[in-house]
Amino acid sequence: QILDKTLATFLVILTVFGLPANVLALKYFWSRRKKELASCLYVLISSTDICTCVLHLPVAVSLFNNRSAMLFSYKAVCIGWLFVFRSLLHFSIFLVMFNVAQCNSDYCDCATILQN
Image 1 (tube, rainbow, N blue to C red):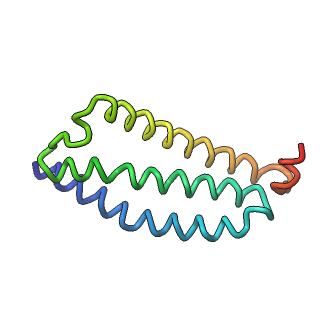
Image 2 (cartoon, helix red, strand yellow; image 1 turned 90 degrees about the vertical axis):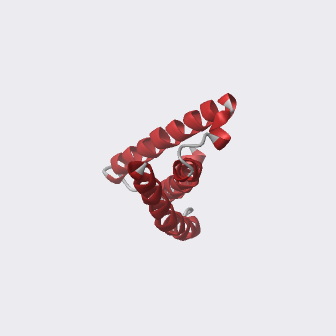
């Protein structure tokens, strides 16, 4: 039980800091999205991270309530949550890797990508 509460507290702390930080990053990169491809990718990365932060909350609530299933008592919700969570994690990793690879190539803006 102590580990559950510790993990839940850790998830809440990460969400409390991660959500506003990613919203600010999203606002910043949204204003720059037409100037360069990296900004477009950072908009996607920030959006993905915001969704990931929000998805941690039901787990934290369940851990604070002695692992009460709550929303996860419904099989469809549990399967859907797992699919969305894993997909977001993989998508985020893919975007970061793509962005790193793109930084090593020639400068390219969003308008050029969309025209091709």
